Structure formats: structure tokens, C-alpha cells
Image 1 (cartoon, helix red, strand yellow):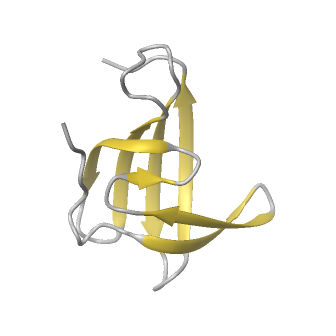
Image 2 (tube, rainbow, N blue to C red):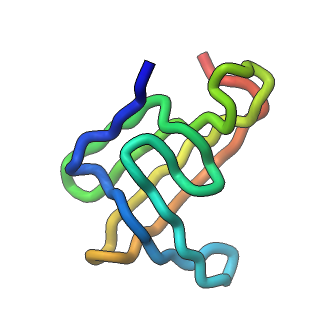
Length: 89
């Protein structure tokens, strides 16, 4: 199974400020740096995106991340994240 994000979702190198640190995050069609493989996503087409990432999607005990991304400019995002040790159902 492939988990490809459509071209209109944020991809590339993005800057954000996290816990008072400058952070660069790389997102491609299937992965987000330090978060894993994209398992699902939703968008409102207004620059707000919600993703579910799995560090190791085949392992139910692995960590899963819910990431909300708000696109602020052409290279700046704001992120809200939560992580769980098991997949939500």
C-alpha cells in the first residue's frame, strides 16, 4: 500500500519555530522528517492540513504522530503535534 499525498499538500523544506528553536522540516509525498510515513491526511484547502504519520506502520506498538500544519508563507509553517505509542482506532 502506498501513502501518497497529493501535490497540493505541503512538500519540500519548511521552517518553523518549535519549543523556541528554529526548525527545518522536510516533507515529501510519503514521509515527514522525524515523523515517519504518511498514513492519512485531511485538508481544508485553505492552508490547514492534518496528517497521521507512523514511524513503523507495520508495527502496532510503534509511535504514531498526529500533525496539524498551518501554512503561513511560501516556506514557513506552524505545527501542532501529538504522539501515541499505539494507533488510534
